Length: 217
Ligand code: GAR
Picture 1 (cartoon, rainbow, N blue to C red):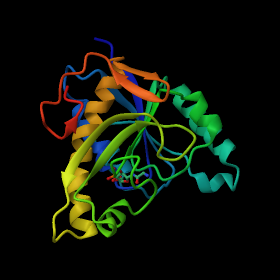
Picture 2 (picture 1 turned 45 degrees about the vertical axis):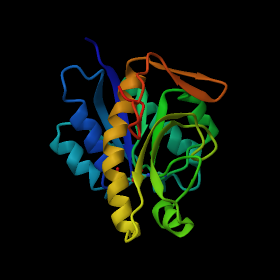
Picture 3 (picture 1 turned 120 degrees about the vertical axis):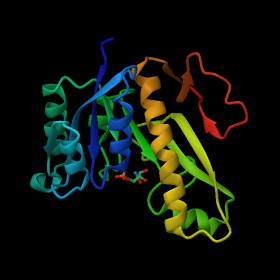
Picture 4 (picture 1 turned 60 degrees about the vertical axis):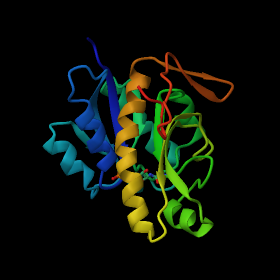
């Protein structure tokens, strides 16, 4: 089986990256993590990737001043040089321009710690608590130029408990993130996602069977 070559872009601790690396160890997983790029030299995830034997690169955005596109051209060139087919953003805290997003259209996905379209942006857990929602979660979606807005691939829901703090809720959501991101990448790498009119359809999806984790694969 030839596996699709995937790069992961990180800015921080890289726990979602680690979940993808772990999933890709399975012999039947349709993707291999061929490259990890961080825009921050101090990102903890870099050490985790190296320890797993994955090639890493630092492309420090601060070296490019305010010129977002030249930073992204460097990113794009590195992805090409490593023959990357799909890109996963995993805690990559840089907005990407329409130029980059257009180049990677339908091949660039992100994980967001909320049930989109609720709670786009930062501090999602504190905002979910402040809003008093009873169910919260995470979303994997295709990246489009508008932040946290692309077609939804997969979502996982978790309960919000009465005594939750932003930290306890974040931990519960993060565990869900680690489950759905590998599921979503599998669907992408298997060629089972079709985006039509801004909605993502899953070819041959199984019914979720009442479980608040979608899609079941
Ligand atoms: C994750 O919770 C991810 O969903 C979030 O950052 C965290 C990164 O953690 N991403 C965003 O907020 C993107 N807007 P990780 O580095 O341990 O994967």
